[in-house]
Image (cartoon, rainbow, N blue to C red; front, side, top):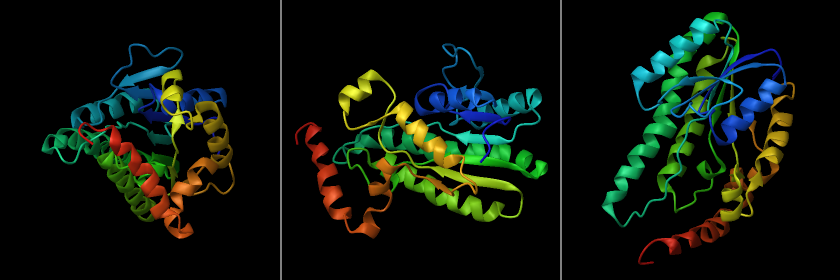
Length: 247
């Protein structure tokens, strides 16, 4: 995928991986618009307010972006939340509903909003963001894993349905990525953001563009079932459940 001279909208581009990706694409010569609920602190980039759980907000953001940038040819669905849940406590449903609303339904809403435009151009790219956790669950965050597995499945179907339209569909599958000093302290094994972006963009800019962008750190998660390591990894990742109250 060529990342220079593109016009890109990143839903969820105000923080974390999305913000880092926005900077990299801007540095590569693309015009980037970042979208999010908290845009007041955004500096050095055009920003549009969007709440992916609100259909009206998604529509308004699309209209604002396309009015200023009718040449838009890349849409990235980056918005997401990562919440812990105690499945022994029925009150966890609040976290589960929020997670599905943002991560899965939010992804679908953003894609739906921009797909007619991209198809009308006859060219463009959609980049979805799932997670290694979508393939190898982290039981402390069950709805997060389920939502990202859903994003993966939806992406595969989207790619099949858009075949022949000129619109490419690529899935970004990150491992744990440290986007702040605090995250590095909480998970020393997390991949530093710049290292992740270096590798991910190296894969993304290959020709032809891979259907999935899986950096080396995410490969054991993506292929655990194939490689026969699923049970071992799941047992290891389940140890975090001891951090829940009463465990």
